[in-house]
Length: 357
Image (tube, rainbow, N blue to C red):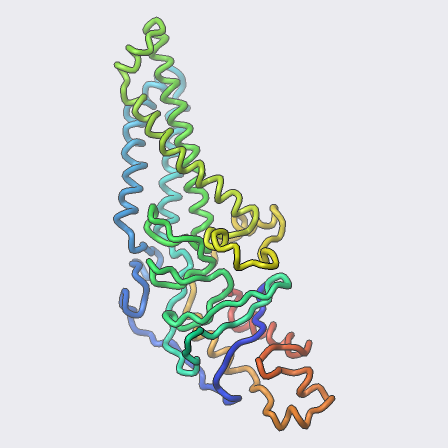
């Protein structure tokens, strides 16, 4: 069962049943009826708009790694153990793999839907309420993507798309961090921090071995192997950044917050509706499979709303009296008060959205 149940919504249909809306199957045009990202292989590969920054990040990892594998690792293999070479190669490969999995995966983009003519446009966008762990979470209608945003969804101004469980837009990987790539992003920054520590420690170890061969002359050892000193300093500087980032996201995972929510804490006046304890919070991130890519959410929402029974007319409410038609059904604001209607909404949510929201 989905933990998020729709509670109420704004509508301007006046009880009329809307026809079913079908999605147009035409190729989407980048920056026109889609976001600014690039898709390849039918969406299997998705690259964010900051692809040049991704190339820079890849170079910042790949270039020093190549120098390390060429000048430092072979020395350690000959003078100590070849396990250093194997461990170094595996760690570098894992870090680059997590970078690729983060930057080349759809982070949770929700495709745009055709405009909904029934949505009232005004100074304030329409809203929809969801029940999350006994908390009421209110979301807004996105006028760009033409759908009511699910909880924890936000529209990224850089990618120009709504992102499910939006965390932040990361310029280092060139795309958004969302529900579908957050786990890989965490593994990327954690492995990068470990790689920095590993390279720094092994470079110092190489210099110590070289100094022992030169009667303890560290100056001569550094002169003979300057790459080790440069790599150690480079990794220490990088560690200051990735270690702080790793610490921040460790806290966010344990408290079940996104970066976006953390820096907008004023939105939660009555507590965090998503926190379930440290173990469950960590399991939600690391133990769940990557969800499937989204389809047009607005189309599904309209089809589901069109299948709902219309609200009772005013005459029916007056005649209902104490029979439960007016007082225990849907009120003028569209909220669900009756247990039977609430169960109906819950069943519609499970069958209509398939657990995407």
